Image: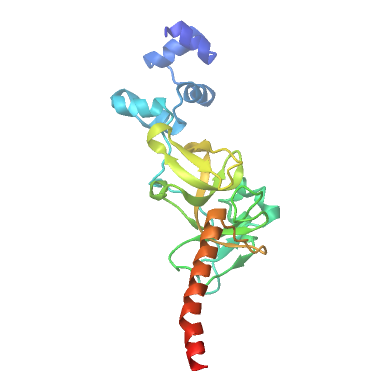
Length: 257
């Protein structure tokens, strides 16, 4: 693109853009934000990194929007609470607090008012939190259940197909089976166990937190469901066993008589 075309796309005059490109002027915050959005580069990289020296492979990643820290190398802020013995609590995000969790997850004041409890059978060196589940997309976990999750710092450790609580910018708290699509487009595919719900992808930049499924609390008792073929086979096996028992015990009884 020419300087005039690029300046027009950014909403700048040609002389202003030319001054930035030639290094005789520096853009203000508003114009830096325009550059960031237009070229899909974070403000942090735009300001701190000498872009003229990065490799072609790195440019390709930036072009695809691959800038998220999936490994957790940068500091991820997670607010926690502890008990009187300085052990981590399991905070319970209530149904009322669910709506504000996306903005309050890193706020110590928000987290401090959540109900807390402890489970002795969970590992002490992990961080856990409990989230309310809405809808029927993840049977046997039913609507109104509470799912306990273990905090995941390095998203590369996620096992494909394993259920996670995913906190997203747009959808808030969702409970889904997760598949990594990081090498393709820096996304995670979220799938339901209920086949009526279509899988969908969420860009890693739109994810706030990931929690690996550990356990769940529900007032509903899951119902067992058998396929017709499995039930038929079970009946045949039972009939065979009964016949076998008759062959053993009935002749002995007749002999005794």
